[in-house]
Length: 184
Image 1 (cartoon, rainbow, N blue to C red):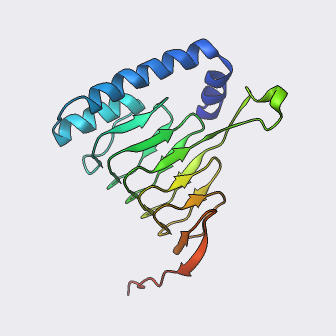
Image 2: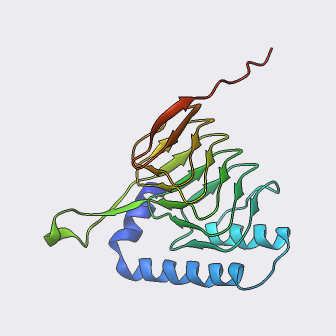
């Protein structure tokens, strides 16, 4: 079964969702409940996401997720305190991603029709390489943020962000382009 099918299968099976959520709650409580060395944090986070993270990964707890098993992390990734990842739709953090305090990455929407509001619509969030997300920003389902982009503090990102730009506001819009040095 491919990962997308696993996500959708989990969302359609309330018992499996509850079990996965309980697992994530147990592991995040362990992660957040007391001091851990960086090595211990990496080990607990690896257990939470079900795959090893690189030794360059750094997380400052507390960290919250309601699923955990659909997070993929590149090298040199930093996640600051208080972040909340709703990952049932899948979250990919590219190499060099920097995630500020209290960032929310939410990959689920509910149906707009009140009669179908219980139906969940998952969509992945993908961060390219060297993306920086400022404190208290929110990224909604289905958004891809291009390599080198910066999301300003407090922004709400509702659509894809091209590479090497700064976005900010609610909803986020392009504020400026980032001039990059060309390697010779």
